[in-house]
Image 1: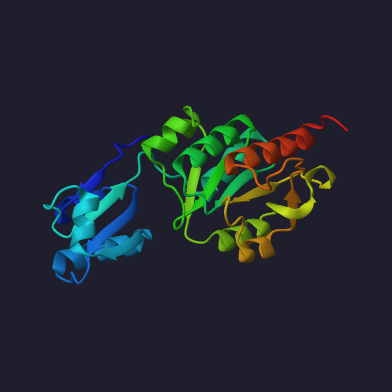
Image 2: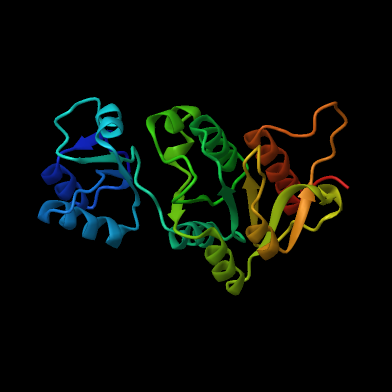
Length: 249
């Protein structure tokens, strides 16, 4: 469901946003603020697991673009987040083995939007992102997705590793993109699967790699050694599509 993406300033407006169930991506509070209203905001943020930063007044003024922020600024999401359970239900309703795309450290909103677009076209049942070190569902993401954000659920989780472990219990296998991994064409990518994509600079984090069942590399013949994250997602996702469809050799 679409919301109006916005910066919410002021203590009461932020509390009302939380209590109405509005999705809050990030919360910025003034360093040293400890009064009653701030404590109430902190309690709501803790309940929702909101990413929180305490910042100096100069930084808060800059972020809020106004000095009338009362020491509090929230960034709301433009679209509602789904749950991982919603994504699995999406697969069940289609009568298909689950196909999820999990993103580790994708902070560029254009990349996130492009990946959501690819996920939709490749038939993935949803995208999973972490609460930290990740772009949220902003208007820029929606535009880059070319409308796919309206059809492909995106879940935000506290811990990707814990999510992978839980999904393994439900029968999913996990493959992560890694240039040192096995060539993707030689891997069995059929059945219930989660494709994990990392950032262009750091790739998939070590702990998440250790919890994946195997790593897949994309054959490259050029003079540079990495692909844009959304392009890599597309190549690997369509190898999964090819194998799930029984096409090719």
